[in-house]
Image 1 (cartoon, rainbow, N blue to C red):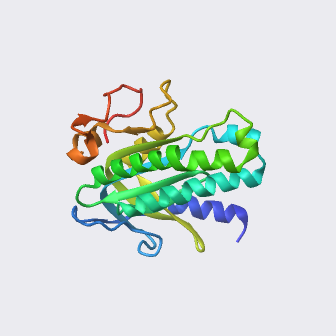
Image 2 (tube, helix red, strand yellow):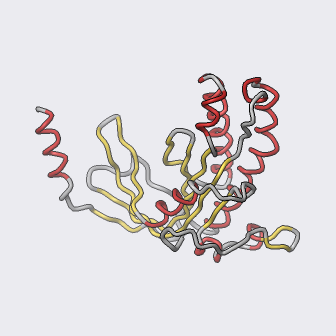
Length: 228
């Protein structure tokens, strides 16, 4: 098959009908590349969490590639372990960004708690260790910070790609909003987690209050799609 024929085949596939199944709202499972095949698709009610390193390009300017890789790998390992601890499912990596998907009861609160734990681990554990371990970072003005975005709602999950190179695509406002929130670079650099209004309204007290005081500020208008 020629390249032109490959491209034409991909365009023809665009018109195919998805065989959509709606997941029960109480289920905590999330489809993966093994459970979605062909034109099968699953609609889920989920909370999406995206987290990544702020100013990773600044790290690349002051440190060798080996150091950059070590810092990013440590950040991703910490994030993945915390997300999984709160029963989130890892469904995507993109550079130093990771996406977690939470379904089932208390999904918004579990995602928010995971985000707060990631920020705590980065600020109090990982940052101190990389400053002491890597001279290039210690000699620079670069500090490790992260930003996490969370949003909730319906999403349609489908399998994309080709054999041995497949991934799960999440289509919906929730994953889109969570990704955009994780890209925010606010004037108040102390803000490391941004959540959608719908997510905030569904938080339980343990994810909303600290010693009886609301941990969250807002709401804010940030000029992107509302919801989540």
